[in-house]
Image 1 (tube, rainbow, N blue to C red):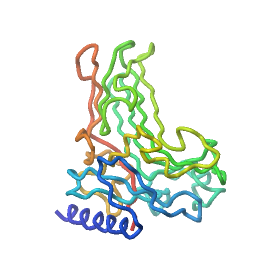
Image 2: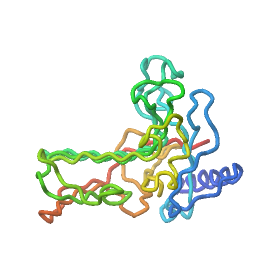
Image 3: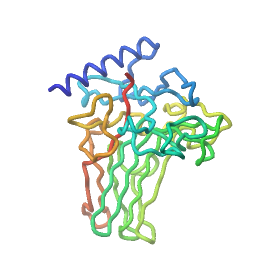
Length: 271
């Protein structure tokens, strides 16, 4: 009960904050990820985004404000230390990670010869892909499905919290090695531009971005100030389709191959 009360109090406050900033709460059906209106002077990335929520999963609340989740020893919920020198604090650009997350939900399946990875993220990175370089900041959302150990040539239905397959292909076919490997990026990561328009996560510029329909969070015992601990696989809530799982179904053989309801979730709620 305490967790639910905390969630409602914090998220209601964030909706109020959005109003102060001149931003209207966005229902999940609107499919829009909004800039929070601020650029971090320390690294020139947006401080955060206001994400829509599935109101059926969050007591009628329609948005949450997630900010940069930069890894550090004091914030283990933002994942492992990935800056070039992990023994030193983050500084831009000399000791800054090549990517970080505003929102991340991963699911993995390892069963016999089957290995599967689902990545759902909204993140900051650099146009060169490897190094923190000023004026190369980009933000984008990502849907990635990687599976090996399938039957070559078979068609598969991959169900996840944001739908089936990718935004352009609901049925995925295993290649000659028995693998599926697809990645869709939405925003500046999809098309590298001279200067990133950080608002390009919204559906008017990335019309197929499925992550613009809502975010996932732990369904119980969520750590204070975060939507998950960034490390532990956990059951979740928030799917706009009420499919809080990752399922692999062999259409050709008409059988379920594997399913998991456990996700590793990362996201820092604005104070």
